[in-house]
Length: 386
Image 1 (cartoon, rainbow, N blue to C red):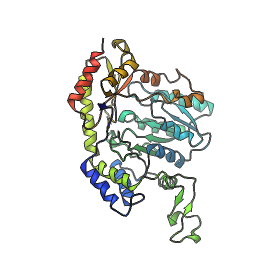
Image 2: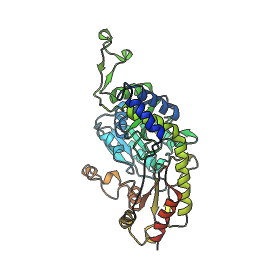
Image 3: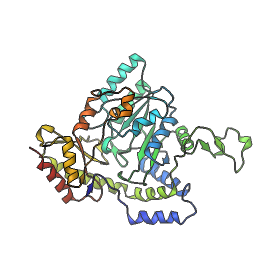
Image 4: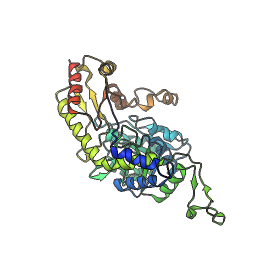
């Protein structure tokens, strides 16, 4: 069986977890702070707050920038539902901008068109959440320029792109966004089992992220509203927050894994180059990666050209699964899920995202994938071509 993605655990990772289990702290402890510092250092951001998942990190990121009821938020349909759900958890209104079919990322042209219409209708977004699909960064600097013109905030959903670069700048440095969010799910570049992080260069956002992540509570005397009451046991709840904290066990794993992140991204790029070479003669489209980008290749997605295949999209999935090759689909468009249909979204609204979903296949890509396995996958694909 070859899964579409798989974690890579080193012996050193296991040793670090054992150290925590034998220490005085397994929940809130020094490893969490060390992991936050390591993420900030790696991404060249000033601050970092880690959470129990990227979904949680997206929620507190939205709340930290002040997202409120009936504010407008835009993102892409070609993502996991958490990218849109976070806005709804704040009572905001969600809408979508279609993707560029070649990159899978937000279409700058469609974004600009939609912003011009929204300006006329007084429905401009307060926030846009961009997504670095499959690990390849968006044209973030162009989106940042638009944010200055149309006055919206930016959260980068970097769940796919830890270790990626744009114009040789590391993703997560927040030079073109207010907050960046990472995921440490097992199929990502590094894992903490489940886990997420927010990076930012804004001290106000950082302080609020910290409190929202921990039930809205601060123990920092400098932040107290009632300083006269302060003592060693005193703390204040200042926001309606959540218990989204990461444990020291998870942080120890992440802290160990981040040491191998650059090596992991290099290996994934090598495997992706093998795929691209071996698929070059087949009737499929591979993701366009700008020369400005270093992708982290969280996943490897191709789009079939249906008329050249003997099987339809669904049959191809069944065929590969019957061979124990667990290809996947990234993504079912968010706006077509039953929950979002109830909000009024319909088919044929975001055509590129829907076309992508009808033709995309996520092929296996993980650290220990072997070239002979790639050869086998490509051979199976060639067998069903006309």
